[in-house]
Length: 231
Image 1 (cartoon, rainbow, N blue to C red):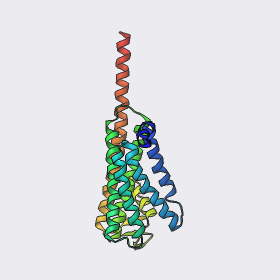
Image 2: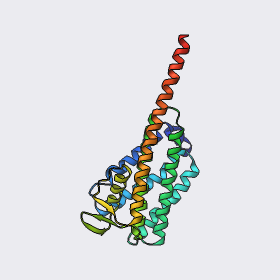
Image 3: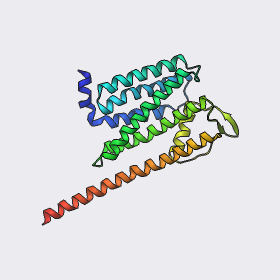
Image 4: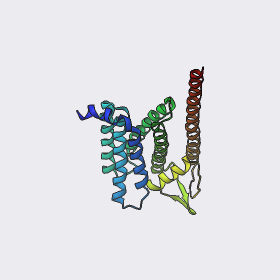
């Protein structure tokens, strides 16, 4: 019964709740936490990813599939947390990335097809931006594990970034800030950073362009209606 009630009950606020989940993660994740607490925060993100497909789509099949995938990811993270280069750990990272990519595509589809400027449009657009940052941080992290990417920071070469530093680097690239305190030293890392910066700039441009187009369209329709009633 709960599964049948939730889509109707949460439909109005689904994007706000989803954005709230992501924002809470982004606020807590950079805090100076112990390794255990940081591990719990990372598992919170996985559980958020498990709930989000059902929250956004209302599909029970999406809920079951995402929870099975999240359970596998949580299990692999726990068993192979001291062996990040294991095949099982790599597969769990790919699964988590695929869930995020699916959420990004779903959010982008609705951003593009919204016909009015609403709070859902704003929250879904912001959620998509943060999901892109999290997705690229996972890509960088997986590449770092297999030594495809190395980083330099504060004059030190080939340093290992933790999940907090990786998300910070991803956000700085996606937002095109380019602070420069962390620099990828391999060609693959540099190309990925440029690709993320390009996607971030295009995403902001498309999102703002969509908002402007909707506002202009609404203004024109309102003007036509007022002229029609005036006649």
